[in-house]
Image (tube, rainbow, N blue to C red):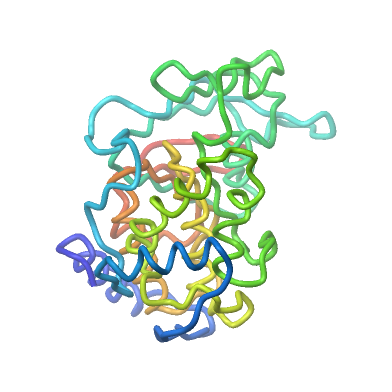
Length: 300
């Protein structure tokens, strides 16, 4: 399953298993063959037939415009980020500073209530009244403090978000319905062909190539549901992919598969994970920060 990075991630995960109790196993769904239906389904399946599919994530596949192809200057800069809701006596985030570079996986860990998910909400644009600066590079200010939040130059497609329980946010009944939802309702005439073109490499990276696209989402394990949620975001070609507690409720094989998927994703999008599960994710993290109680972020 993947190259040296995936092997090292698996080794780190297995070493941590002796120290950390895993959550209840949910199992993983074996690949199966299935039929297809609908216009987008037919076009997508035709394109899949001409590609070599694999249920394992793969590295180095060109998903997007190459914005994350090289490691170098930061793609995300956070400066002096302070956030305090009107109802709070103290800031939930207090002077947060960090950079995230393309081609890297960042991990922010800390206890529950320390501000990890709050930070993710600010970066995703869900919380818009804060002090400080959050900038996507080159020159896309998502917010400049003063309560402006995203600002006029930031666009939602630059940031992808996978929530802790993605199944709560699914809008389709099947994998294909979920993947194609926004594209099916687009008024752009080129939306269909663009979707089909992007779909095959996204399925490969997320390990969904051999999965029948008419499989019901309710029949998927938690690990596969997260893969679908990641695929939905990658179809938008984000500069940064944010994940909130991605290993919650997953067994060890599913966590290993997720780690290999993220190793593949970082080839095209910078990845930022927030989690309290450090033992499971430090094996693949390139940059690690600790969020302490009071919303203070420090590099480790």
